[in-house]
Picture (spheres, helix red, strand yellow):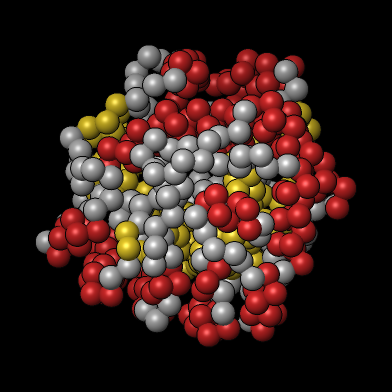
Length: 417
């Protein structure tokens, strides 16, 4: 465990009590009174597995995939029916894996969702570049999808080779995206690859927008211990210089920054499955965040299906938050969106932000990480880098450990941080 994350956890929670995930869960999930509830569905299948990808995935098998979708629909009905009336939610996101592999059944999943939930802000689906064709896009749009996110990583062949991917045909992307329009077309790019320069990133960004994107996400490369990737992470100083340069470029172009890593040429173009106050997750490895708990489903596709066949939820681990622990989670992901409204914090927790973290936010302003106007804290360029820098410690200290264990054990007894 990193000393930085351990110290930060103890300071912000005002306690040496660890984050404890245990192998238990509530059979009835308390989401009825949750406001701004989001939904997430995980599809773990891929035609081939990228060595750098840390997410829960497995090689596509039609028979296994059909069984999985049947189980997924059961989970949706099992959880959704716990609320007497349809529950209003913000958005629905499909992640993976490669969700487009189940394009022929995605309408079935969305129909199950619609039986129990009202979606007010649209439906998003992640896509591999190979799946961006008119036929697939039309199926998704007909099913109700309004936003797509394409995992480009880089348009430059030298980085596609490093990542074990094949070259992306930008012209074909542009033609397909012109034929079938969506509210948001986001493209994911990986930042901080070996020897990557500002000109490389700028070229990727420009190609993304000229190929049909109205939103891009520039995610830092993170070297997870359990992946087979041999790509080495970029040194801190070089990474900061690159991030500052590309941020300045976005500002020069007049693009809108909607989070630490996302930018758009239209303010209304948004794509984020993370920045929700509460959310329900369906599928293997999917997580659920509620007011006083966070739970994560098993990573095993077979055990996931077995649990649902036995009419049981597929929960593997649950943490039951102390009030301070929940506040830390709220602050971390709210600040990811570059702003935090102290009034919304008080509405959510029933206590003023100043009372709980007054000295912390005062210090963050003095250090130049935040500014404040009319009760709203905004993350500065300096603050954005250090958020990004700390997030990597968090990822490698918490997510790397948890996902590494859960890839090997379907239902661990406990994990402590």
